[in-house]
Image 1: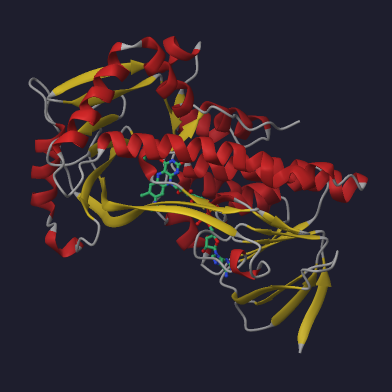
Image 2 (image 1 turned 45 degrees about the vertical axis):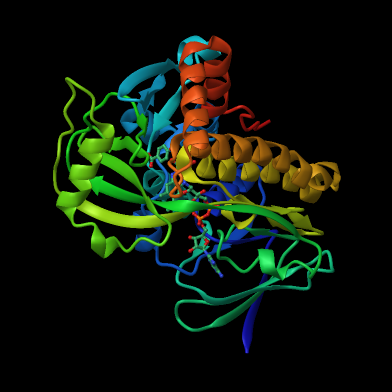
Length: 398
Ligand code: RFL
Ligand code: PHB
């Protein structure tokens, strides 16, 4: 026996995409339910992104989610690009007419969103199981799930949003043969650590070193986040804390600069992949965020793309469900894929320019160095990096 109900939009996944979509729809008077198979504590603690484009920051402010971000976020006007033992500054504000980026962790955005949704009385179900989407050939798709207490639910919806990440169920629920996938895997991974030590830099350092890429980023004035390129199938057991710090010092070091070390609170290895599924929609099932596309983290685009998708989707659903105007919903996939492919190219470019191929290739290495020298010497090339990094297609919330 299932408990039956109805709502306007069924949302699968309480990551940043699903939660923000539910928030934006509520601002337009549209009801939704969000179902999530993990616990609230797990969603709020999962270490992921940390860097927001200027347009993402402006959007979160415009929709009432900016207070803690403005108080605690760290605004950066550029990055450092390091190679051949030298560190160079890329000044985004100067190159883009004032654009910037903000460090504010995905964990904090998720906490802010969950708190705002619960305060508004939203239907948010954690720890669900056996999620299914069905009746996708109709104008009333159905969302089924079993709640944390074991009760089966069947919710009739006017639309469903698959915001269930790369390993979710919605993408595979689209009719067979509809979805085309374009993808690339990279022959390396990132080992990421969270360390309880003040950052050793005021802005992010992207370092191409002949022994592999390294990135120094941060979460707060007390917490550093650092990444190392490691082989694709690397075992984390091979990286005791001392080895991590030695390698970070080696790859990030320049004369006169010192890396502060501290306790490592968390460490994990993530694979690098580019993946784009298209179209991002079938009738009234819409995919958004990592459910539809993945980029390697080098350009810091994944979270920003997820936010761009759901901003477009909330506007499209407002027109479709509120005014029976299907045009923005019909354009949704193409609108998003333009932004997605720009970011996919940028992330691939940053990744290819900064990582060292495990099969030594002197030709490739010289091309990387030539490109890096060009980026720091030519205003046109630096502007290309800066305008993509700070967000080339900012989300638009009418
Ligand atoms: P999420 O965050 O994966 O959320 C999907 C949610 O769906 C749930 N789910 C289900 N719920 C119900 N039923 C099912 N059958 C379900 N299957 C799955 C999951 O539990 C989860 O809660 O996807 P979303 O919302 O699209 O958000 C995407 C972002 O999380 C992702 O793109 C970024 O974290 C990528 N990323 C970065 N992006 C940036 O913009 N800037 C960065 O600095 C940045 N750094 C990173 C990153 C990702 C990383 N990893 C680990 C992949 C750094 C790393 C290391
Ligand atoms: C992060 O802060 O986790 C981060 C920042 C920039 C990147 C990737 C990750 O390119």
